[in-house]
Amino acid sequence: MYLGCGGAAHIFRVFNASELSGFTVQFNNFRALGNGSNVIISGAGITEPALKLDGAFRKISVRGSEVIAGAGSMLKDVIKKSAAEGLSGLENLSGIPAAVGGAVFKNAGAFGSSVSDALKWVKFYRGGKEYKISGKMISASYRTGPVKIPSVISEVCFSLAKSSKDKILRRIKEIIKMRMEKGFIYKNGTGCIFKNPAKISAGKLIAESSCSRFCSGGVSVSPLHANVFILGGDRRSEDAYALMNKIRARVYKKKGVYLEPLVEFWGVFGK
Ligand SMILES: Cc1cc2nc3c(=O)[nH]c(=O)nc-3n(C[C@H](O)[C@H](O)[C@H](O)COP(=O)(O)OP(=O)(O)OC[C@H]3O[C@@H](n4cnc5c(N)ncnc54)[C@H](O)[C@@H]3O)c2cc1C
Image (cartoon, rainbow, N blue to C red):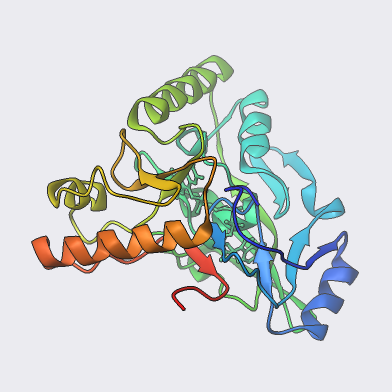
């Protein structure tokens, strides 16, 4: 797993549309795995199958100002290809370690942009059938994409704007630099653990509740960003879960706000 902790998962790789269709007929209790950057699996693992898109789902192609990406491709590769073609619209998302399916599912975002801003259409499978939504049918909000499990996003189209390659590459560099300064690219760091409540940042609430030095086992609050955890060499998923609850309790006590996790904990925790 991306975050390097947790137990076993039975991974089912599917390589093409007919395999994916078959999988969604065979199983309705499963997990869809992107790059695993927003998922922490319990030490005991998970019992349901974890679907991973591979093969044809990793293809990225360009048609005019549209980029069509398989949900198994990496967001960074889509951004790289778009930049090479002089297509702008995804630069602010540079540095998010997501697969395209995971990015669309979570409506990942940064620096005022979200994945959904550039989406033209989304294809997904459910119960063996392929569906396509486009335009106004794509309803997405803060860290919530247009598709819910047990639907599996298979392919998406980003509608981008022609721009200068140099300008795009400069913006990508700028974004990566800002992410490093803000602590969003930090060795062994997670992304944001909690959602931002309306109009306030979760990081600010955590820092103001004096949780910045909190730790649990091998997991601690990042010195650069209070809403990010650092996973030490002796990391355990259960430590991350315990730290999350410790912070939630403290912020609730100090600020009266019950923070909602953004990171997903899969498996059995808290027993
Ligand atoms: C260092 C770091 C920095 C980060 N920075 C940001 C940031 O700036 N902004 C931000 O929004 N997030 C950020 N994140 C969090 C994470 O990268 C995003 O939530 C991302 O969208 C998750 O993508 P993933 O492919 O890793 O998905 P996963 O973590 O594998 O899965 C996330 C969710 O998507 C579902 N999913 C995955 N693929 C599919 C599919 N094909 N069909 C249906 N559902 C699917 C999963 O079931 C799960 O519910 C960061 C994480 C890290 C570790």
